[in-house]
Image (cartoon, rainbow, N blue to C red; front, side):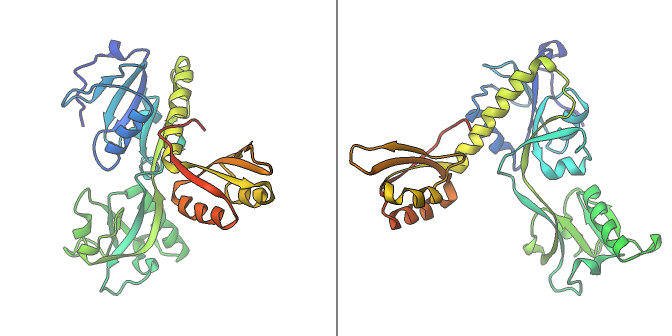
Length: 305
């Protein structure tokens, strides 16, 4: 596969931090929001896969997510965003380091079979035909099952690669089961096992290629960590009597510790704490139940944690 990098030559990239971003698919739009939150400004021209940052010594390289682990692990790319599953499928786990789990792009790689068929558990597929777009992960998974069942070489599960239309493999006689990232109910399939739970991750090479860029790599990693934290947390602020403070701090312990400030009114304090956004309504209810007043929730645009 070739990439359109005609806008920049090697001299233009020399000395820059190379940051690989998925060029399309389910991770692309989320990554653009992440770059904006980290204040990595750029202007990408149509049909070009490389562009330089306007405010950092960074070149952004837009690649298929499946290629990014190899470019980071074996090439000159310093940072990248891809899926945890893609790293394992590319067998790059020893050559890259997962710096951050990003909280988006979550899915499960599942073994799926026809809902009306005779196969009810994953062991029933042992020795049969499985098609997948994740050959390495599937081969490892079914090898463990074959070994556990003591199947001989000529009896072992057969894994075939299909890049697209995996969901049609059972109906069209190509496979007895499939391994897929989505539950294909429209194709009459249902999941009988989960191979792997995955999500988007920020990765770097396990062997630094450009030591002079370490401080910039650390800066970008911290910024992205702050953007992710801001999407997961809110600030909860409330007033409460010191008599009930211990109970309140059990409800709002914060990421590390809450901030407690004295109020003019005797025996009362103000508390400010980070709480998980998904739990904020329950936290407010529990605080009110123990006597907290003026309970407020503030969204975070960005933070450093």
